[in-house]
Image (cartoon, rainbow, N blue to C red):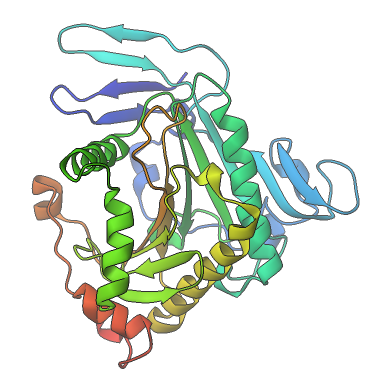
Length: 337
């Protein structure tokens, strides 16, 4: 059974997961799965994965070929779906059993496909699957937060090259989300009811210096205090608290925006490793001050001692320059590697 333990001092939680345990030698550099013959996510290999939770297919039975989106439990889950949550609290020690969900969304049957080159239909179907799984898991009262994320490239943590995303539902709200909620609440009270993310959208659109692209429903920006080179945020222009509030009319603009941004990063940085994650409201929706968004962080620099010791970040690329490069206004970003 996995276990969550809280730091002595801060609100940082650590997941200890025997299912993902490693011997010291297992931490040496390893090669990710790139061979289609051994890939568990390729059509015809459905028996190599746990039974599917969700699949979009026109033909064939469950756990067989014919799908274009397939969602399965992670074979090596960080958290365990079965069981009830039990907390153990003393003066110094605060822990709970690791109840949660850990799933994989296989985004295409095509092993060689790049996410930024998906068809508009396929991108929309990925987003639909995200929303469907998000809504389903938020109904489980054991879960307080659902994070949807993507690791692209070995340096970004992807152990299998076949395009896929992941989802983890946790029994506590992550510290980063609590910090965002707290900041949103402070801004709301200081301004008499305004949303800081709505203000970000409005101000950045007016200034234009850090805008990468926009459409009728979404805008992408290089954030003012970007932690990483070419970090990019995608924000809904309308105030929407949770990802599950995404409407059918917004699905296509979001697919276009995500494909556009990843295509620009792919073109400028030559298919960089990256992570993206959807920050959204906690499951209980008690706080109405949230504004969901997507953060995309290319893995171009190392997080070393200074960053780990202070929480500061050193970014060698000004966000205004990153936005200009991604808009195609100046050169390339070869020097950013």
